[in-house]
Amino acid sequence: MTARSIRTAGGALAAVTALALAASACSAPTRTSPDGAMSGSAVVGIAYEPDSLSPLLGYGKDGNSKIFDGLLRHAANMELQPALAAALPKVSDDGRTYTYKLRPGVRFSDGKPFTAKDVVFTYETILDEKTNNAYKTELDALKSVEAKGDDEVVFHLKYPYAPFAERTVLPIAPEHVAGKQDVNSGPFTTKPIGTGPYELVKWSKGEKLTFKANPDYWGGEPKVKQFTMAIIKDDDVRATRLRSGDLDGAILPPNLAKGFKGQSGMRTYTAKSFDYRLVTLPTHNKVTGDTAVRRALDVAVDRKAMVDSILYGAGKEAYGPVPTDSEWFTKGTERKHDLKKAEQILDDAGWKKGKDGIRAKDGVRASFPLWYLTGDKLRQDHALAYASDAKKAGVEVKVQAGTWEVIEPKMKTDAVLAGGGAPADPDFDQYSLLASKLAGDGFNNMAWYDNAKVDKALEDARKTDDEGERKAAYDTIQRELVKDPGYTFLTHIDHLYVLSSRFGERSTQVEPHDHGLASGPWWDVERWQPLK
Image (tube, rainbow, N blue to C red; front, side):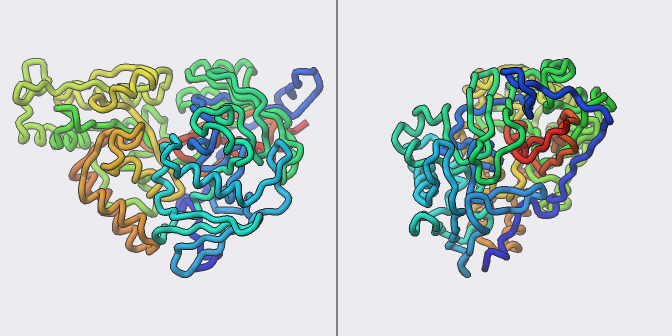
């Protein structure tokens, strides 16, 4: 196998939609920099901020970090392109060795040269058991990494892992900085130094991240000299600030994004995604841990109604982590909304309705809490719709809002309206979502799902580069989720953004769940040419 045969990301979904729903001949006023000079600056509103800006702890692992670069990066159509590597890797015939030649002349923003040693340092540190990186399993296939001089890196794999090249979009950290401090708590976690198009100026936690253009960026100095990401958790507040002109762009839920359609100086963009919304059904809860309850809820939920009324058509029904229009989706695993079937499943399992319409079995009332993140209207609306559908089947779902600090300690027994999804390869999301050995590991396998057939199929799929064998394994997983659902998958959502038309017409990529911070129309902000 050669570099030409590396399978690029996205498959059939790599056709990217960047739909301009509203355009205007008028441009918004050009922003001024703090010193009053006219400048190419941009301020965008996003919903979340990371816990850390260190790639050693997981920041930017899917690419598009503005501070760092990976060996490879994604183009608009999600195909892999060289970044810190001079070319795509050469892959051995057995699929176990990946060799990268590095781009010459690259320097970190502090002026120090980037070399192969930084690549080795980054990957070895992530795999170190002392490093608090929740995504270590994503590099499970990696046996070792070695530097051959300053300009060549060789990765040795334990087994032929088909999507390994996708893992090398991971940002590279400087050994001369990060290697001299505590990886988990040192200053590098909040004051990073990278090779990327932007340098971090200031991170005001809970408020904003401010970046300035890196004048010595190997790809050319960005025209947008100052880029700010405003952290605005509440959707309504984000929309209000965009409307007032305080923001140049923002991610918004469909019901708020539609209010900008036709507005002068604004364009609305729709990005296709693998991002799903689901309800976790923890096995340690006497109600949600019952397979019959899980199966009943799986068919009681009206997914189409959610797509129509909550997403305003900007999405599709979800029956698992794989979108229905993906080449990896298993046809025939769709579940129709069928309230009568749901009631029959519960009746047969001994869950009988009481006078108030709520079922019970062996003295246990069919009732459980469902948490969603405060300020997230999409999750709130999904949670309320789910509770309404469940009640019709005789299951009481008590919807509650909270921060992650409140929710996380309760995840072992309480249901959560959660999200996930990664477009590059089915292994990237399904393994962390379903592998029983990851149950209770932070936000991995939040339902404590445990299915031996699924575990085997997950391992089989990641330990071969034969596409037919991988497809068969993921078919097995999707069929098992019909018989033994650990989650109720609800919708796959499109991501909607509104952006000032002064930046011209932008493009979007097929996006993961984690969006706004790296994804969005600003995924390539370093290439923007602000209109005058």
